[in-house]
Length: 300
Image (tube, rainbow, N blue to C red; front, side, top):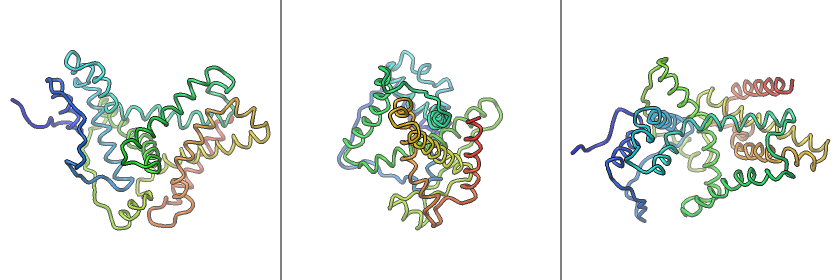
């Protein structure tokens, strides 16, 4: 009988779980009052991005290999379980549609192009149901755990967006380059130890912007672009009338507004904070120039 973990992949726990389930093992959800295991998680932005990049690469590597659940698990585990594994294995790939939804609708709003049905259209109902229903279900699910507050859930939404724009996007590109033979996939261990200042900010739920310039530029670009598009939509509503603008662009304004609301901590790091964990002005000015360039080009 073979025992132990399945190594040779960045997410050996997922790979091991898949293999033992394909051998007939059954899984149960067990959440005892007394915690069975304790661990140390990342406390800064750079640690979180690095760890999730590694997880994203490993999961996508599984999906693109012979261990893809639809291939390796065919006839061994149920189709529903095969699809459930894809929630993890396609973490990284989901960065592409996320990047689309936080950029294209906003730029279309800037140009006056409606991408979603009008409020007066019958098709408005299913689109709005998906957008609102998903977030409502996520909030209720979090509150039912009795361990996450509304404020904690909101922070998770922010980190969900940041990870998809950075960690999972990097993981997708790295995996594609590896499969094309351009580069090799490395294994970088993320540190779990932070300085006193960073740990204090973590306990106060204040973000530590200690990531690379490229990472911060991507986060800033999305935040500033959506803020600029929301201001433009507001000015258009003042001139044309709120009823007309909301009828045509309500879902785009709602999406843009949610991105702006989620990124309030980013704006604080840009404008208000003066500590070591704030965003450098060099990155801010470069990103602001790029946002202005993209906005001008999109309106041509």
